[in-house]
Image (cartoon, rainbow, N blue to C red; front, side, top):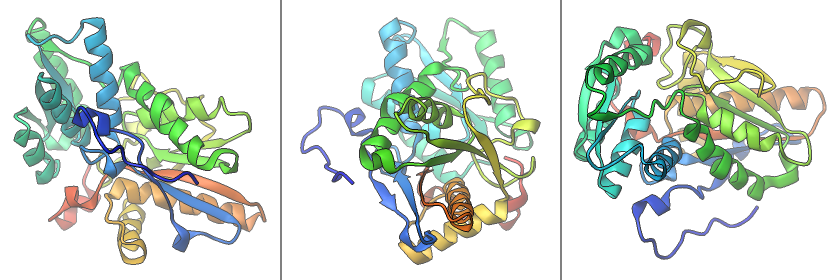
Length: 313
């Protein structure tokens, strides 16, 4: 594995996005199969969404779609909002966000700390309710806003095609046999998979979804019961695996206890999916290397209420 080297000097906090370490999850590995988690919480905004937000901002500025006299507005379940807020503050653009009222308090506080305007949608409607509300707001005042729509914006997945996937290949290269990550906007899955499928040897890529429509894995979509993001193309990946809420939460607890990794529940669900794939490979007597994404830190989820495990986000 190549050594993780943090640049000694940066011109902007934006330059700190990417080049995150790949951590081997040894305590979870069955014999003959390696499992790695990409530490996306080490991005300056604390999540994998920094990559998409950076690409969305830079591409929109280059096209002239985003100017200083417009407000960037989008819907988010939290992490993209933090990333947008960081980018707006760093580059000098105003940001407004529409998010379900029941996203974690930490995400509300962090985005407001950057000076972002927050508009809350119905918590019972989850991320789809936020999408509907932001579209209504923009339709009433289109000249005021730039609406990138992370769910349909190709810059979302391009950030991962250009950054996340090449970094994974640089670290594990030809050893990589499987990649799995969860579906929210689907940008990570679409971008990484597109790039991995161009590699010289076959790499199997699985999408992960919550097992049920009413789930407690914040930021993830149960596609059959949700508004499917226009950037999502089911034909690009090799299959879909499902993880229930308790499995994702329990794996997050296990990662803390065994590896000192305090990550969110969507990251826990990603690792559970990778662990299950690794066990299946081992059961068939196959060797392998499975990589997944550790989306964010667990401190984004402090003080949850017990009923949130079964809540529809």
